[in-house]
Image (cartoon, rainbow, N blue to C red):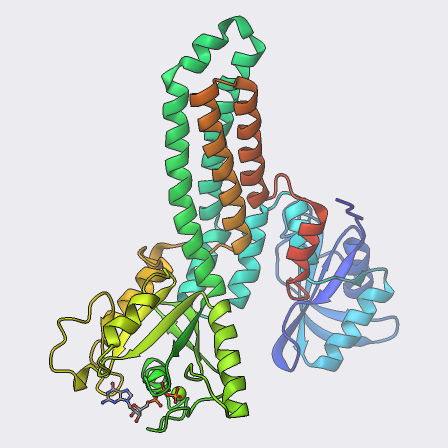
Length: 441
Ligand SMILES: Nc1nc2c(ncn2[C@@H]2O[C@H](COP(=O)(O)OP(=O)(O)OP(=O)(O)O)[C@@H](O)[C@H]2O)c(=O)[nH]1
Ligand SMILES: [Mg+2]
């Protein structure tokens, strides 16, 4: 990773006016910049009230905070100038810092330096961005847990176990005369199974954590007049979509966000699916089908009062991403035949809780949100590769007793796990991760 140790600076507080605005500076030039602007290098970690000056004049007065390397966020010398939060004052102050040799920081560059200086691992750095961007309280709490290292600890524990296995297997290769004994040893197989089990559990929690951050898209689909828009309005608690008794009311794709136990959901209402000669409606149907393709989950709404309701549902139930809703249950006398779906009424609200429970179950939200950590799709993918490698290692061991191949799969497993915490991580991936941060972080 090319890491040029120059001095970077940025406004750390959000743009606009505020009581206080902070300029943050990090790098080897901080001491000299302090001398020039403050007339001194403040005592580390001590809030120091000072003039902030340029060559001729005082730009502002405020609190200066100095952290000397390595005891700072980035691990470098850091200076924070807490000035008055006006855009012009802060611009003047930032320009002053730049004129003294700093350059404007790229998005996420402070966090990137913290990572490169081993102040935190990659998953923790990502948690900072996720905390700042969190849209629900559960996501914010989960991000703090990841930032504190809860997720990383789980990964590191897995890595330690894989390393233990590798040592064992690689020893059997280095001492071939003992190979048979080593590889026939049941302990390797037992340990492999243990790691696999733990990995599966972490994968579950990670999928959950990624949902907290990234949310899920849920698309309402069904025939015209089934009650999709009524259900949309019931779930969001707002009159988002137009409801009429005319089939083909909804044409556009209508989006609304809602929270389900702290998980941000993007709920999408669509046009009823049917062959239509109306050009506008036909376009609506096309968009509805496309939205369904992209969805994390589809709520298939079936009008329960239609005689063939169960038959309609049967074809839909095969897709495990689909939750079937038998709507208008208030109009049905005998409900016993409607099985494997949620019986409900968008009109009366009956069955709403069952639907929410089923959505949670289908999205994999069986875990307790209040104790989960946040994660990202990137982590799920890496864990998936790690699991594939473990599965391969196991079959190579059991079926072929092929020590070298087992060792190679275990190496791949470890490498994928380590990518999560950033022990092995490609430069372009780092660029992508930190590039999505906000400036000044
Ligand atoms: N009795 C009863 N009527 C319902 C229920 N849900 C919806 N309706 C009625 O069914 C009609 C159609 O409802 P919508 O929500 O517009 O149906 P839709 O699936 O969005 O229809 P399109 O947009 O045309 O595809 C309206 O008259 C609703 O009042 C229900 O649970 N019970
Ligand atoms: Mg509609």
